[in-house]
Structures are given as C-alpha cells and as structure tokens.
Length: 198
Image (cartoon, rainbow, N blue to C red):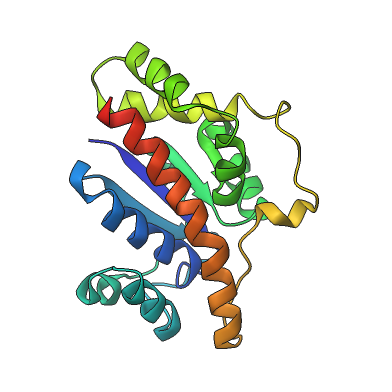
C-alpha cells in the first residue's frame, strides 16, 4: 500500500481532479489517494465542470460525484509517500505545516519537470534499494526526483510549475487548467508505475 495526496485551495477543482485521475490510472496498484485544500470548504462536491473533466478523462461518474472537500491539516501530511501541490503557494503552505516532508512534496508540474532528468533505470535502482514495500519504493522514487532540484533548469516562467485555478471562471479556463494538470499527472503515474512494477 502506498499513499499520494494532492492539495489545492478549495479542494473542489484541481486537487480532486488530480486525485481522481491518479486513483483511476494507478488502480492496478490499489493506492490510497487523498486530497485537501489549504482553505478547503467543508464537505463540498467537485464543481460540475471539474466532474465533467474527470469523467471525460476516464474517471467513473460515481467516483467524481462522491468527492467531498476537506481542509488541510498537519496530521494529513504525515502518511503520504508523495504530496502533490497545485501551485508553489500550496507547496509553501505544506512546507510550513510539515517542513520534514519537503523532500516528498512538489507541485505536480514541478514533479513532471524534474522527473524528465531521471531515467527509468535510476527509478528502478532507487526503488529496488528501498526494498519490497510499495510505500518505501514510492518514497525512494520521490526522493530521487527531488534530488534534481538545483540540477534541472528552472522553468522559463516560474508560474509554469503551477496549475491555474479555474474556480468561478470560464469553461475554457477549466480546459486550460486540465491541460496543464493531465500531462503532469501522467508523469507521476509513469514514475510510480516504474517504481512499483520493477
């Protein structure tokens, strides 16, 4: 068993969409996928637009409808093996709550950018050195990706590590947000799959 957590602001658009995509695309490994918001609304559903984006990308309709938002608390950050924020601001707030988790915390687009500098062979080696436990293997993979900080070229624009917030904005903005998020989620899925399948 391993755990991934996604974090945004209200926990009704970006982080639940990321969580549902991860849960669906990593289902063969039976992961625990959670999400929360730094200013999370109490038990709100995903917005209709976010639900539509999830369903259009293969998430079962019942799963998209079942989401209920929650506020990010320090204790939620103890167990995840990988923590994926939607923006640099969310990552900063996570680091303030749980500074010891920085090595396993990224914005989702930062993770994808840094992972480009890591080969599948390196992921296999790091995961294998961590042993058979899936949680340890995912943590080892995350630490390997984190080791690229300071080595990988920074993005041309720092905001390229963020996923834009579509809340109360146009459908086009929702699509733009999803188009930023989905390739990054796929990079996470690839890295986790390599770490666990090796």
